[in-house]
Amino acid sequence: MTFVATILTLYPDMFPGPLGHSLAGRALAEEIWSLDTVQIRDFAQDKHRTVDDTPAGGGAGMVLRADVLARAIDHARTLHPGAPVVAMTPRGTPLTQQRVRALADGPGVTVVCGRFEGFDERIFAGRDVEEIAVGDVVLSGGECAALIVLDACIRLLPGVMGAASSGHEESFENGLLEYPHYTRPGEWEGRTIPEVLRSGDHAKIAAWRQTQAEVDTRLRRPDLWERHSGVRVQSASGAQRGTTDERK
Image (tube, rainbow, N blue to C red; front, side, top):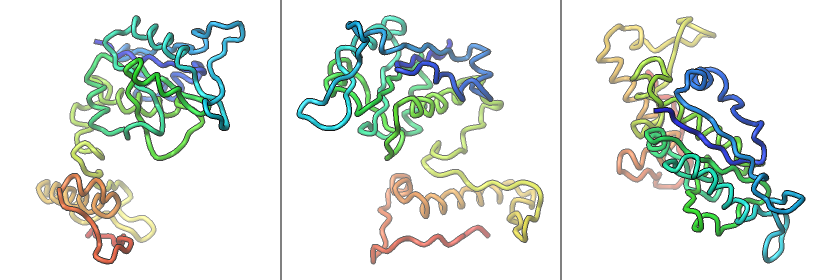
């Protein structure tokens, strides 16, 4: 079954963008996934095709109107009724690999891309729209964030990556950051590949990789480590954690 991505946006020419290249582009050509874009402005009902208005209560910027968005979302749902509808907004729930995998396992996703100051809040309850954030940053619009969501989903679709196990050990798949990688040359600017990786002992290599994944997660992402290990990570003094390289 083809995974269907539907994008509601004021800038449909931004798609497929980078998703038209590399693995995602090849998968699009092979119809492993498909892309529909919906111009939000087509659902405005005045002669100026107005999609936004000033914030209630005053303030800077403009807000996307709930009535226009609702008509666009209703249209998208008639095209793909089984697809969840998500909106890209910094006020949303942070995107996780677990949520990406759930989306990739479904028939597709409809993504609403915001602009200006964001969405009229009533659209989320009025049309059962899930809010998703890709990070603690503010972007000019939801299109770049939508590309992130779609790229993360597409690479998990059957037939996209070369080997079925290609993504199993990558960052976040098992709750940890991925272990570090090395390749030739064996020595570069006085830095060498860890000896264990040249040993040919697969059991030792696997153990080293697991250890490094744990070390890097604990040092770089204590929030992930806490969830993974169930142990709260906090120094007694509250001082910044060190970055000692424990790769031996």
